[in-house]
Image (cartoon, rainbow, N blue to C red):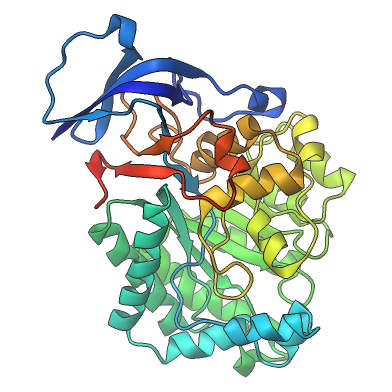
Length: 412
């Protein structure tokens, strides 16, 4: 099928040549083309330009986007949307004064989600997750990374990964998969963390590598969870079977996880609410993408990633949702972009770059996604009639999306 979009008020994130990453001061530049058209054949952008240069292209469907913006669909590089049930009671517990750590010590948090998921059938888990995936796609997410980590047994982790694989096959969205078995220490391994790490390394990682059920390996590198030695062992075991590291670091404490991840060629380091000068220096001249998760900071009232410090140091930054049942029960990337501007002092240009090109980079897919470029995949957002792209973060509570196109197909 071919789709022709004409009279576009402004075509956003236009790149004559593919750009795979945007860093530092360049993040303030967001190239656009006003009064434009764009032609899609099958799932690919094949042509675009100014309406003044437009010739009469033939297409199966013509969309008149007068007064509307067109931009790449969001690339959400950090989610946990495959889970069972919810943790709304913990939301109330936090309102009543309990911290995230206190809830976890009482058996809540990740361990709560793991227990529910272990008792949920694979088909039920798939149906719950598919609803969430379809919902975030309607809100403009066209590419998404999904982690395991709420299984915490070999069988339950594999069940999660099979569900993600099924979502890949059934959904229009581009999905990348991450093994996050080292998300928390299971109850049955209490005071025996090393034995659980051994289990992940000896039983789970080889099976995942052989079955090709994941692209990446992740670890929750944090005090009370997995330390630097645990993280190193798991990254090395994952890398040995072809799983690229993408690591949770510096959410509550900074103690060297960033430098360790960079040393092991991590594709991204995610959270970074706590940052030291050493962490900034470790990221310089690396291929590792820093990823901020502002919705998490908003929801559990922790500091925000110091975006200005990171970008002003000449580094790139990506934005992702961290969609999960405990600390970010939302995958709305429009809110993520708004929150980055409102709370992290990112400009709209920086935030849109962070949620498109740099988000794609953090999933290893920026050669095909994240910008308007001939030959790239047609994952697009068509806005409602708005004054400028500044309205996207400005009108943080409004739905400004008119249509979403994923893989060259308009979402119903």
